[in-house]
Amino acid sequence: MLFLNREDMKKCMDFDRCIAAMEKAYRIFYDNSFVMPHRPCIENGKNTLLYMPCFIENSFGTKFLTLFPDNPSKNKPMIDGMMVINDSESGETKAIMHAGFLTALRTAANTAVMLKHLAPEDAAACGIVGAGTQGVFQTAFTCYVRNIKTVYVYDTCLKDGGKFASDVENLLGRKVEFVFCDNVETLVKNSDIIITATTSNTPVYPDREELFKGKTVVAIGTYKPHCRECPDALVKAADGIYVDLDFAKEESGDLYIPLREGTIKEDRIHQISDVIHSPEYAQHKAGKTIFIKTVGMALFDIVCATEIYNAAKAKCIGTELEF
Ligand SMILES: NC(=O)c1ccc[n+]([C@@H]2O[C@H](COP(=O)([O-])OP(=O)(O)OC[C@H]3O[C@@H](n4cnc5c(N)ncnc54)[C@H](O)[C@@H]3O)[C@@H](O)[C@H]2O)c1
Image 1 (cartoon, rainbow, N blue to C red):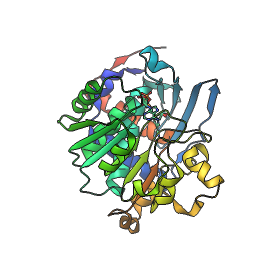
Image 2 (cartoon, rainbow, N blue to C red):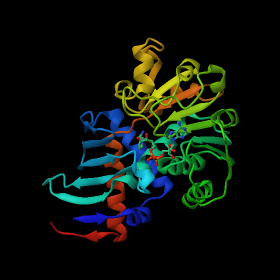
Image 3 (cartoon, protein in one colour):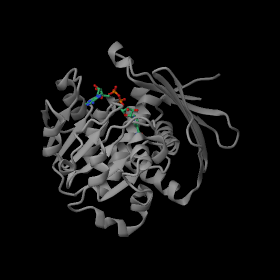
């Protein structure tokens, strides 16, 4: 069994490989050639355990993810866990790897794929709301797929802006200008692409439609029906609303609440895999207001983890262990 820690995994993946892995995952999703249940979300007070199994052709596995919101105050990551890959012939455990790193990587690569298809090609400014672990990866991958010159950052508890900037630049391998905002409105006004990567349970933006006109907004936080990062104004302003997984409509309050309250109708929500594989969706790009809600899925994890495993084997990276 191959054991891969964070450093091993870093050596195995680059931007293009991660993005290609997510494109492959969307192809599998579109072709319906996978087996994946809705993920059980087990809550104990503030803390959550997500259990994310998936079968694809020639591979299967499970991601066990813990989300402990008090961890950052103890200098520990909010998200942790383990990804297990099994042998598709025998079921034996083939590899275990760091699920926190995998999650940040595949979630950011997923955003990159969605932006490639839906964000204006000339986007030059990006805004990141929530400068935590996901924020670093989301920013780097956004700067990779669009020629972003300025990154606007807003976080209600920003600990170290300099560290955030250097973490992004180290991952990206180039310099960008960072502007740390003292309010979210300044960020929204100045950004073409805006990404919300917070642990907030209530909308992080003012409920004003005009603020979002012509923007591409991606919301990656909230995966619980009673929680939302985005106000009604965003779904009302949007020319197109997109999800990675249909289940997002039930799982996340960002869509569940406006759907339940009748603010939007279900037929306004489209699947990203249809956008990627149907050319008629290309019209949504220029000058439009786009809202993308992503909750992630186990299919992303197994495809990305399998790519990492294959790269590690080819490069002789990692430690062989026996049970
Ligand atoms: N869609 C997906 O596939 C996916 C994958 C991984 C994580 N997530 C979600 O992404 C979110 C962020 O995860 P993380 O690992 O980066 O957590 P984190 O704790 O490292 O970072 C969250 C940041 O958000 C900030 N924040 C909280 N409320 C805010 C507000 N109202 N305005 C501005 N900033 C605010 C916090 O100060 C913190 O810096 C979580 O909700 C997590 O569940 C989604």
